[in-house]
Length: 320
Ligand code: ATP
Ligand code: BTN
Image (cartoon, rainbow, N blue to C red; front, top):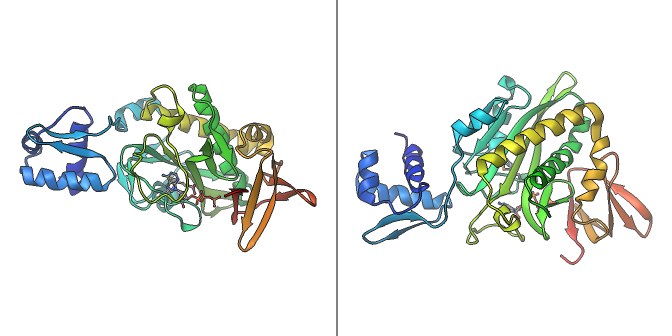
């Protein structure tokens, strides 16, 4: 068994709940107790909270629902790959683009090189969050790609609402927020052009029940378990999100942003609030007035309503 297959096998046991002795785990996998202990350290390094009680064995600090190949296979009607340990689900699809059909999905439990915009890191511990990417051949071409993170954001917020989870908002152009804390981020990457169509990968990382002890995130963040006042299933969320993305992307191909602007604005985290727009060394203050039909963010400044668009713009709270 490959090194990380051992760790995954141990995690499958631990995810059943209760204590598991080093001896029993070792027997199951045909390895020594010392080897089990080494693998547990590796599992902890993936960001999983496992503790040991003398005489009882190992237990997960919080219950963990692993992503299931079987459940997803039954429910999804797109080609998908569940790869528990990966560098980045976006990178995986970018590398495979020539052999992929539009709508193909990659999902993971842990990313060693999860990334955000402009080379920033996306913290991706094992088993507690979602890391989901979809390949999409955008017939409308490269110029329309800017709208994708907006469309996908609306699709996610509305899917959550259908599941009874309210209060998640959008931050232009690519984040999901709850009470001014980052819940999820969307990253659209282009891998090239085939004829008029643009080959794109859309990725989302959403925190579901990330440990409060998680380090390395330099802004306020939250998890869906804090937002929702009911339990939810990680597998069910994947299915709902994939379906919602597909529907939204097909709609976008035909109608463009038309049907999304009002829906986006209804969920805008910063609507009618004062913000700063940072563009390299330039900074502009104004009151957010939503997005326009091109997907640009509208800011009311001393010059009236101005629109801003482009990948190098960051929006921040005025007092932040
Ligand atoms: P903007 O895109 O507007 O510049 P941003 O600061 O959110 O805003 P992104 O590139 O969108 O930047 O996202 C990466 C940032 O997200 C990281 O620098 C970090 O602050 C934060 N981050 C990283 N991992 C997580 C996570 N799991 N949950 C919440 N936030 C995270
Ligand atoms: C952001 O806020 O900048 C976007 C973060 C996007 C993270 C997701 S996780 C799945 C996919 N794979 C990656 O490496 N990044 C995206």
